[in-house]
Image (cartoon, rainbow, N blue to C red; front, top):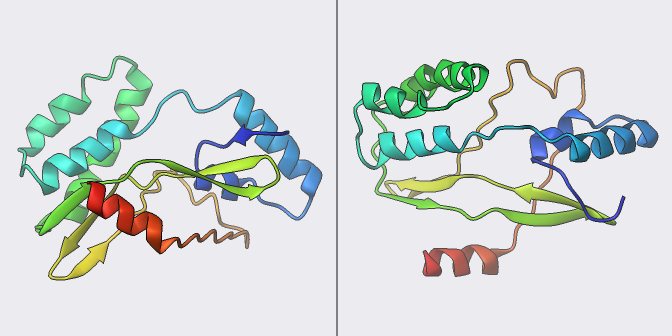
Length: 160
């Protein structure tokens, strides 16, 4: 199981149980059959809403270019939720964040892939989007992964 790359922290957490064998089997299955799409177009839509004040209809048109019908429907279904959440938000700054992998076990790397950070009035906002249809962390299973390396944060903010 050396060097497994899990698609996201949410994927890791949704498979967390008290049985190590179950976890191992599910994570290996996930690595061999990763999700076949990503949410990058939604992150771009958020950027367009926050920074460019883009027209909502134009954002829908952009997301509608997705070729796969089922993926397109899923992405368009999320857009109204993003619009209502970010309506009236006017950040003082916005910065993209590069994906980083952190080891959480021997040979098990999990990405930290928050798409952005922005600030309003001296407050930092580090949104964590979870687009699951139902809460995968329900049923008493909740895992908190936290990594704080101030030097990494400072270096990224100076280089961006």
